[in-house]
Length: 297
Image (cartoon, rainbow, N blue to C red; front, side):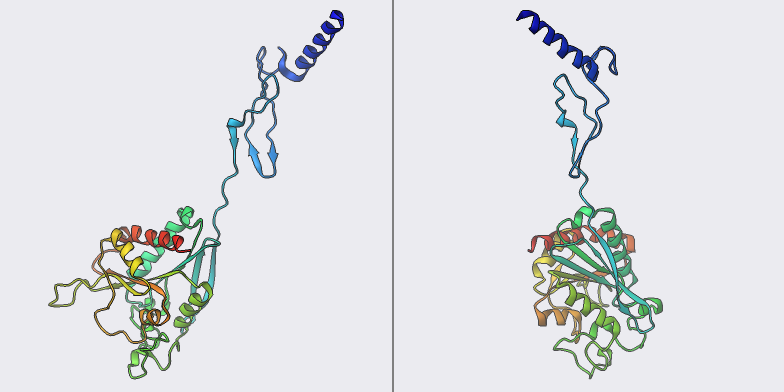
């Protein structure tokens, strides 16, 4: 019996040496092997793990696959009066949506610059949209931007007076012949209809103060259900949060938001600061708007 047991031990040891655990294995005299192949099991990637005497894998080196990056999709919403494309880029696949648009007035180029900075931020930091979406229209009025004009290519219609709000009036020539008569206005309305956004930010610039006034005009101007969002943004850009604008705005997007119970903040940036300074001042506020939207499920 003892002889049979001894023979069994010798056979086991011989098998172990033949399997790469003996002095002829890689790294002579070592109990470890280094030629264990990389394992791939149902998408899980295991780093090369060294087997020990009993061939157990060292799971401390387990590396899960990287999380997939959220999608970035650009769609053409339509064309301006002069045929320029108006595009919208959507960051992220699912979840509540924040719609941001800028450049509805072509003579406010810093609003477009801030929107483009936001675009770059979202491309560089995809984690911001892991469980939400951000839709960005960097320039609503490309014709006006090219002309440095508040109006679109008609020269008389202010796109932010052309929305189908109850306050729309044909008596004001800035409003246009009918609500949403302009292709640029239709593009914004199409985005709102398609996305059903939880929150909307319209980026503008304005004079810091009117002549003779001591009150700042810039700030987080909320409409509809936008007060809580405006207050949250104010904690980051240090602008004031306020409801009523300084003058009547028939047919404005803010009026349309009030009529339809939308959550809207018009981010009014003072136009006496550079585009870089405007972005620095408002980066945190815009990221806070994304967080706010993500939490509003």
